[in-house]
Length: 422
Image (cartoon, rainbow, N blue to C red; front, side, top):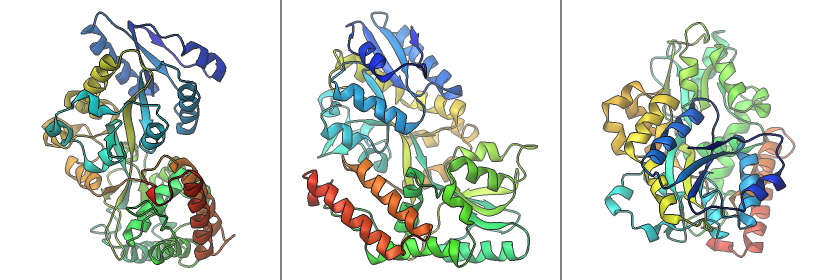
């Protein structure tokens, strides 16, 4: 197998030129190639290539940052490049790429219904556009609540209980702050808001694609987040500049009673000598408020370039990488959560994941996908601005949500989606 590495010095035009001359005996995969995950991808694809001697399979590295990879894909695909053949997509990109005609629908390949049903429903829902499936879940990510086992006997069931426990622990001097989450103006803030929003019974778009982010439930959710920072003080104002790693460091240093983060943090927090909370934390679902607890759905999915010269070989690679054995190996080496439900009964998973398999599966089954719409990137950008304005006291929470809703409705109307946003 020949491997092409991504070099930061390459320009977008140079990459486009390289991607426009496909060979019928070459199959190209593009995605993450850093660290243990990258080594795993190359090893799995090497095994696939060994079984297909008629093919040369190339791993075409892309930037690890999601926004940079998205920009690169858009330029490639908008130029109708036939290469790369298989693409690693963020969970929120599938409808955008499907509506643009850039990726193939999978119904042409005839995947058995019972095998398709093995994937978690929330993950599959993010891969559908107008009733057709355009990608398969590769691994999943979900927001989780990390809590200090030395400060409380059990995790809180509600947000109100979380606030009370966090405040008591802080006031007693056992921690500096009660709760930390990702509050910088980026996609992570939308994920945190989505979990609070669902806990209060709200949504961003309804089943008809109409914007409902200015509902009473949404106002209650954002008011809770605002009050947690500026009234109760259980969340430090510093989170408004934090992403995942700053949040992890605060919890890892013993400064917080609770943390909202993704599963990757668990293995890092458990390292003796590096983490002050090693052996003193556990993971639970995010608490509810007036409705149900939920976890924002993340993860990666595999799609096929609509201009590929060999769709069947590309489909074979997608099927291989999303098979149970490859998902178990990914869990063992990269600690990433499998996207198939049946895999969680495999005994090997108990020693592979940073969290207990039953806890991981329970969180995934509560997962809520972000709005499945081809204009999600624009909607998220609007929401990030207005949420951050509210949390930094530039706007009242209700006004911020009204402003966001109005701008989001304009995007849907100008795109021709309107109430058909899904």
